[in-house]
Image (cartoon, rainbow, N blue to C red; front, top):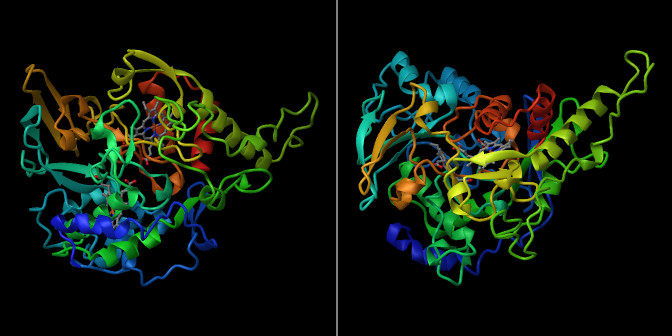
Length: 479
Ligand code: HEC
Ligand code: HEC
């Protein structure tokens, strides 16, 4: 059976009953580890040794494979360093460098090495691919201004520059893609967000992921016809059984030792269901929201008590114990450090309160993972005009009903729903295996973890001290 857009129903039917990966749990096999700025990460498979001839690793269509953009060593994303090395080794002819979505514009000149290094500047600098999406028919807004430094964007195809999200740890996924555009709708028999209508009911995740794989092949790999159902299943057999996390911290050591619960083995055993620890309606099974969503390193909190007065210099707790305690303090800050959340569309308006006291886990709530456990989207301001850098296009949108206008570098969810209130909303990404895949945010605007923390400290006026910022960074880097 060949799959085309119209064939996806057949694919859905083929998947239901064949595959319930949430219950699939076999022997774990470590498949790879790679160094990063904070230590190293590890990926395991719960389905035994992985088959390196899986379609995920096979070049298709234009010579790219999924792994061209989803590389284990880069937290299953790609990093600028990796891309710069690939560019140097191939004079910019490696298939990851293609005008379709690798270049700043599909029309960019790519004949010479110099032209290619210009054309692929967003990939080389920030690991960003160009996603082309239209203003939807019947949108509540129209596009009245385009400031595209690369001269390509139009209402038929806005250029949006986005980081590859990792296709692993999928057991904890509900919204697929930054703007959720591959999250398949479902009937009321599916999983539904509490308190909303049938528009907030979703098909099994495997349906979304199979559609996603097919569309990835059609767009990124330019393979006419896309995947057969069996081919999509082959890719899902791999990705849905991969768990990736930081495993070693350069100073704190093994993140799964001495009572620590970091690393991919504990992650693979982490419980999850639709609506777990939901901050809005409460957990869908227990009814309660627990802000202590991260519970990996509590055992390390007293590793480095302040040495008693008179302790000679160099005789206090070891560097390892201090690093472990810093990670544990960072976890406590992530769970409990209160700040005022305001002006976040999808959050304040939905709760009907202009100011809500919350913590990082008010949004990053799925236990020990940090995504949302239902498809929900927030505008924290990453694509606002104020944070726009000259390398990003800027779009002026006007609300057809009120005439109000605003500028954004990425309308996010609004390009799916056509709703004015959804402009700039993105999903809450999971945070495991974070250290391996800088830069962060959908547009790669935070070059490292410290810049992520700096963004939040300014955005929500948290007032973190330098030591608190270091603790939070140590924790995020240990995920
Ligand atoms: C040319 C680069 C490229 C290739 C090739 C590619 N991807 Fe991606 N992938 C991306 C980008 C960029 C995103 C995020 C786009 C967005 O959200 O708008 C993404 C997102 C995803 C996601 C969403 C994860 C999440 O958390 O929502 C999955 C799953 C995924 N890709 C799987 C695959 C598979 C499977 C293949 C091969 C069939 C593939 N990708 C090929 C660049 C690529
Ligand atoms: C109001 C909801 C909300 C709160 C509160 C929040 N986040 Fe986020 N977080 C998001 C959203 C949405 C994104 C994706 C934003 C984007 O890329 O446009 C995100 C992205 C991130 C990322 C980048 C992940 C990646 O893969 O690029 C990190 C790291 C992060 N948040 C950490 C934190 C920390 C630490 C705190 C507390 C200081 C926090 N967040 C508070 C909603 C929130």
